[in-house]
Image (cartoon, rainbow, N blue to C red; front, side, top):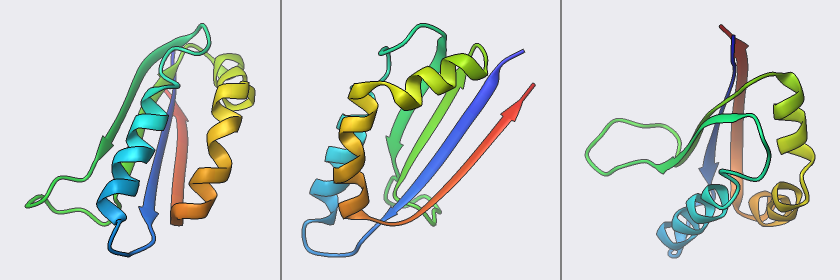
Length: 98
């Protein structure tokens, strides 16, 4: 059984939005292996020409709730939160087990 953690962000509009989207994806990808128990970790930006309502997605899976908690509390993950809060207009999150 795995715990899936899916998060989507819509960034504030502005002339530099594409740069901010790229930076969000880069920062998230930097967290891909920060704790044991990460099974899947994919951060991606919405692609032009494909239907979307959000700008960035994180599609990740963890071995268990403890691994997700360790990820969420890890200093590298915590360190990106101030930047995320400064550029994000809306956030959606869903966790589920299978």
